[in-house]
Amino acid sequence: MFLVQHQNSVNQFLISQNGFEITLKREDQIHPFISGNKFRKLKYNLIKAKNEGYETLLTFGGAFSNHLTATAVAGKIMGFNTIGIVRGEEDRKINHSLQFCQHQGMTLHHISREDYRLKHLPEFITNLKIKFGRFYLLPEGGTNSLAIKGCEEILTEDDTSFDLIACSVGTGGTLAGLIENALPHQKVLGFSALKNQKIEDEIKKWTINRNWTINRDYTFGGYAKVSPELIYFINRFNKNFKTPLDPVYTGKLLFGIFDLIKNKQWVGGKKILVIHTGGIQGIEGMNQKLSKKKWPIISI
Ligand SMILES: *Cc1c(COP(=O)(O)O)cnc(C)c1O
Image 1 (cartoon, rainbow, N blue to C red):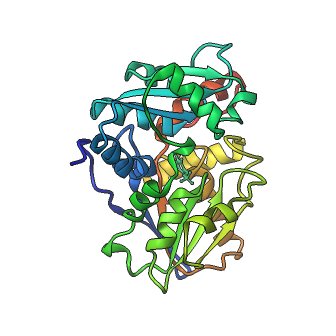
Image 2 (image 1 turned 90 degrees about the horizontal axis):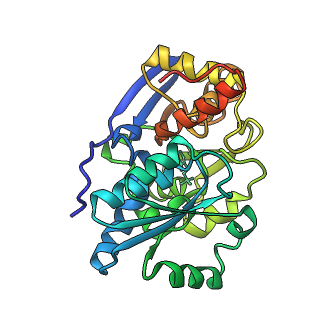
């Protein structure tokens, strides 16, 4: 039914130390561009869009959005037209990530940050329909109930022995899927990628289980902000474990886990499953920014 060719993710054992065992679930290897949780979030939405005869997908994202690239590629493979509404007016050269979306056939429509904040309003959507015709709407970050249903499939019967499941959090959709599909003996720990985000209420709307907590201590100053220390960590991690991490989500997640364990502040279970949600496509765009600042860049 789902036309996209993809790999199943595998668990990669990382390290065993002082009674802690860390295993990484390689969702990043599902597909080179429809990677990780974005594949999970699109799956049931795209099936529904096909079944209901939609020809066009429309969605929203920032200039480096993994969700936009995943939608562009999955849309192309499944024969949809795709429209990406991009936050921030186009006043500088279009970046690698957006250029890639365009090459997949996505129509990009840049709007100001002020207008972007209004995108949930019915009038806003009506105006888009006048401009672009009938479309299947995927929300920003791709999170809705079908997306969460897809994310529930991240956990399988191979994962029953873990007692803690850790994942990075943006909109919280992926975490919600993990929360709902975790077993009674498992706790779910989310590491927020955004500062000051009141994500708990959002997650409660999507979930019944109360087996989870959010850590906000590893945002590195906010969404897509990085420090040389984080980049050194990502590069060292890649060297040691032959596994790339992205600087926006998974790099901060693994940094946080290693840091908490090292400082003896880890309070969760000791058999840890970490979800590698993907995001590798965004490294190139981040490296363009880093080299302008003359900072170290991320090795892939
Ligand atoms: C989008 C994204 C997330 C955040 O997922 P949410 O479901 O929005 O919380 C985490 N990791 C990566 C790599 C992503 O691209």
